[in-house]
Amino acid sequence: MDVSALQKVRYTYKPKLPASLCGGIDDIAVELGSPTEAAADRDELREIFKKTYGKPLAHFVRGKNDRIRRELKVGVILSGGQAPGGHNVIAGLYDGLKKGNPASELYGFRGGPSGLIENKALVFSGSQIDEYRNTGGFDIIGSGRTKIETPEQFASSLETAKKLGLHAVVIIGGDDSNTNAALLAEYFEKAGAGIQVIGCPKTIDGDLKNEYVETSFGFDTACKTYSELIGNIERDANSAKKYWHFIKLMGRAASHIALECALQTQPNICLISEEVEAKGLSLDQVVDHICASVARRAENGENFGVVLIPEGLVEFIPEMKKLIRELNDAMAEEAEEFAGISSFIDQIYWLSRRISEPSYKALQSLPPEIARELLMDRDPHGNVQVSRIETEKLLTGMVEKKLAAMKSAGLYKGKFSALGHFFGYEGRCAFPSNFDADYCYSLGFSAFVLIASGLTGYLSSVRNLTAPADQWIAGGVPLTMMMNMEQRHGSKKPVIRKALVELEGKPFKAFDAVRDIWAVKTSFLFPGAIQYFGPPEVCDEPSKTLKLEHTP
Ligand code: FBP
Image (tube, rainbow, N blue to C red; front, side, top):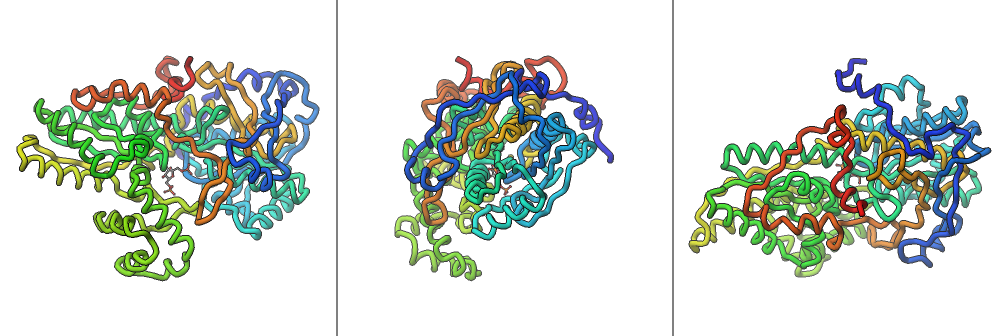
């Protein structure tokens, strides 16, 4: 296989592991804490997860574990959007299994959860794993967004696992995929199949975190990649001095990526969806906020700037949030009928009889291309595909109009020329940073220890991540502990609670303390490309979010 010079050298990188996993394989024991409770809606969740609710927290210590040498067959799934480091989770899991018992086997399910449902599996060889060590992407087996949902899909998943003689399945995914992992663990337990299920916290969005999951993997690399690009654009803007760049950033509902990139690059404006919602800002007020900065900078002769926009913004603007909720419900309740309506005009007419008057007005006030984007298919988990809504265009159009009105009123004298960008897919398959390479390998290895120790319904967890890797704390968090009930597809479902940006949290506070200066004075920072070789303060630094959240 032809590989780049960087890839060749990255093969030789040895990921760092927590001390509890570094010794001999016979010296890794599990310590269990007290029973746990769900994040909310405990009675309902106890009913749904009769077999797996309330398990204790687990962490690894040096000690004897007589189960670790068992011969095991394990299947692994990459689920949902790509995130840098997925290959290292698989490598860590593979190496753990082989260290435990060279006869153990790791199966990879192709194309996401559908690979388990349809029994599309391969057995990994050592040389195949070696070709993917420390590389980005999920291409070793591919990913997919199928949700294991129907009774038939659960039954086929069990059938596949039984047919292959699996002891366990590892699902590498975000909040929705790990909710699926919890449901599958419960199903296998109810069926008395003795097949364990372990999840791994993946998503560039950074919204799968809590007291025990400090960050999801991929967030670090994706943010560093976007920040490099934003820094380059800032420098271009500061050189040419003629454009305002409106940059939408992936992250789905959460604004963690936008906030982290803002901390790394110091743009003029970074919108935070969670703040927009908390303050109940309308779309017009968001536009006013941007225009105020454009006008102030124009007074200083600076007709250029950078605005960061979290991709989920529209879902947090109260009138839009209401509209999207009503659209989701209407489109889910009569999904087949809606799917049969081909023209946009007919879709709008159909909706006019199903959504409230204010929502209908909000829909009609949008530029037609944005309204069309709001009516596109939901993902298999019922979410609006916010990556396909061109919020950057919506905002530039509205800012342009508002500035023209301000000019007529003598309130603005500058020139405004805007360019739109969307950074998302560019960062999801980058070579993992050293942080993600180490973290992911440790997560995969931990998943092996959880399996070997006979645990099911857990999320592999590695904590204390701002300390050097040997001080990281590895173990497992019960999946039900992170759950609550939420409205999905028109009914209440158990889901892992999404962690959104906390306005009282340290990362937001750090941003809030300086953003008014950035809004007027050019304060750009240029972080440059991710460095893989060199001094640790350049190569091994975790994200600013993680450092702010976890450094006392
Ligand atoms: P996950 O939640 O599955 O990790 O995916 C995250 C994400 O990258 C979002 O940031 C983005 O909105 C979405 O995936 C895009 O989905 P798709 O890859 O299906 O276009």
